[in-house]
Length: 62
Image (cartoon, rainbow, N blue to C red; front, top):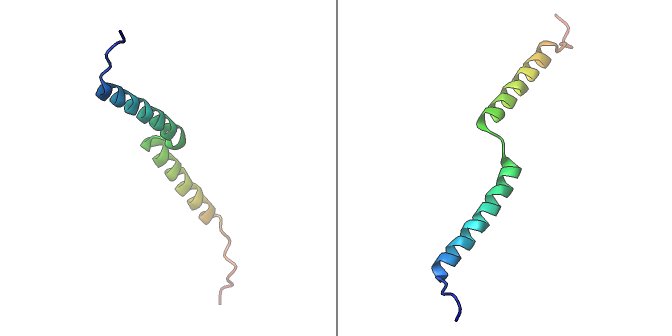
């Protein structure tokens, strides 16, 4: 005689495994911490400010 299987438990286990696969995929795609994002944003702002400071105005004084 075969083993008894609770179908609710099997369905839940399968759903958990699929969710784990999906979360692993999402971590690979979007896996940056808030700290890393804010650091990159700050660095980008600093780079932009430095570039603006070295901008030469083409206007001639009147």
